Image (cartoon, rainbow, N blue to C red):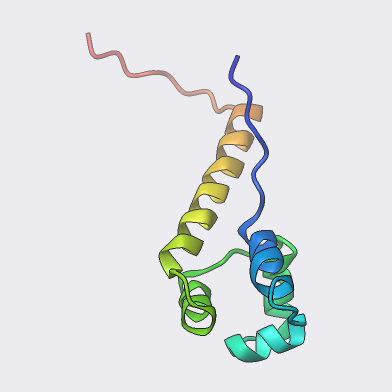
Length: 98
């Protein structure tokens, strides 16, 4: 039986590594990223995704790679989708090549 390990939302990683790691407030970080405080707060609390636009802003302001943040988000999104799929699988059939 496959066991799925829980993944952390990329917003939590952003909060720990960038915001807290640099002793920033959410208000200051949102100002630097030129987004509203609620927008950043939703991302940090796992209620919103890191979009390509936000990833580019993170890269520009704090360095690193926008691609890194998008990969984290994509991996997290796929994990959540698969978990939901397995919990309530649709009635689909496998395609038989033979």
